[in-house]
Image (cartoon, rainbow, N blue to C red; front, side, top):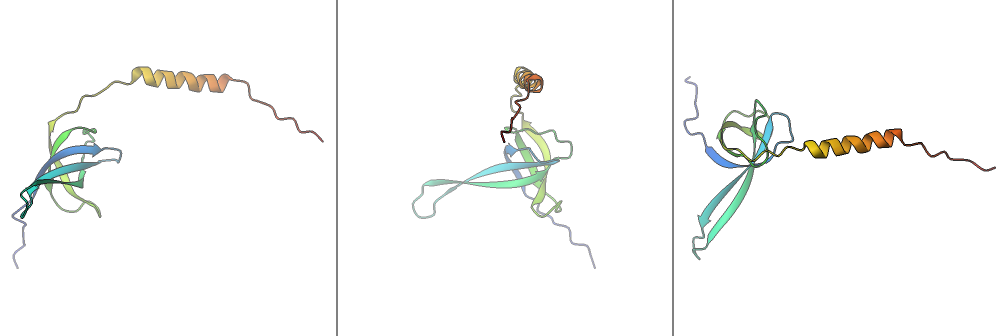
Length: 117
């Protein structure tokens, strides 16, 4: 028997809406169609989970994904390329403020509870 190779693989472009999982991104793909009777343009959104081997995507990136073998129950796409990168914002000031607050809490004297009999 000949091995059956899938000739048509879907290639989709969309926006990364989540990158919180390890080696997985969630991509929102928007499709626009005209209503068959009324002619109004309707936009539909669908979210796909895609495999990101190097964890290089962040939220807001515009990416291209392609259909492939299932990596897990819901993950059946993989990242092909990043078309447009989102602006990366450095949070150095915020992280240092959080660390300062944590240091103050550790150095603050503990409240003692006195039990009365």
